[in-house]
Every structure is written in C-alpha cells, then in structure tokens.
Image 1 (cartoon, rainbow, N blue to C red):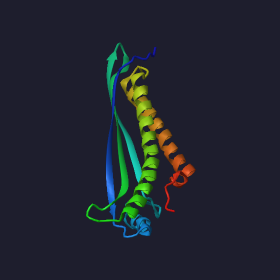
Image 2: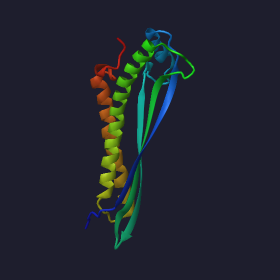
Image 3: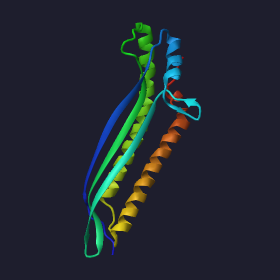
Length: 178
C-alpha cells in the first residue's frame, strides 16, 4: 500500500552575477568590445550574456512499518548571470552610456526569462517533494525522487532552449544593436 504524506519542504534562491568588462570608445565599439571580451563561447558562437541555473535538493526520510516516506526536503536554486559591464575605471560619454544601458536592459530582461525557468523548476520540485508518494523501500524512494527531479529540470532546460530558438537569443526582444 502506497500513500502520500505531506512533509516539511524548504526552498531558497541564490543569485550571483559574473561580469566581464568592456571599454568602448564609441557606440560601435560596444558590440565589438562585447564580442572580444565575452567568456560565453559555445560551438564557436559568442554570446553576450548568459544564465545558468541549477536545482539542488536533499531529502530526509523515515521508515515506519515497511513504508518509507519523505519527512522533510530542502531545495535550492543557484542562478549565475554572466553579463557585460563598462569597466569601472573607464570613462564613457553619456551617449555611449545610454546606448549600453538600453542594450543591457534588453539583455538582462531576456536572461531573467531563463532564471524564471529555474524558479519554475524549483517550485515544481519543492511541491512534488512535499507531496511525494511513499514506497516499500527507501532505495526505491530515493531512485524515484532522483528521476522526478531530473525529469522536471530537463523539462525547464528544454524550455530555455526553446526560448532562445523562438527569440533568436533575445534579438526578437530587442537584444540587438541598431
């Protein structure tokens, strides 16, 4: 007989920014500097910004009368944004600053959509763990939890790829230089 017990669930989000610096002397230099300095290169394609996210989880379980169930769970989302910024020690004109700021706002708005996928994955994992079914063995419980978490994360990572395909990595959302 399998049954579900509501358990205590805790989740949190930790966000970090990694910046790479640019030193543009003209508006045209902004794109050139970004492409020269970005650390985000995959398959010889240079990306201006990026978001990586990872859901980490842990469970505590109890066994009672040959039934193993989750007694508590802990989930955490780690989000890392990699973004350009004008070097602190580099002075730019107001026109260059405005052009960069306009571009940056469009880029970070796109990257926040990737973060949102991570937050949706975290929410779904946290909710699923709080209402997870019991099993006759704790080994089966652990295996089922791992599969469930992997399936949820895979679903939202796929949405990240679809977002980039549909928006051409944000270009259709204004992430481009005119």
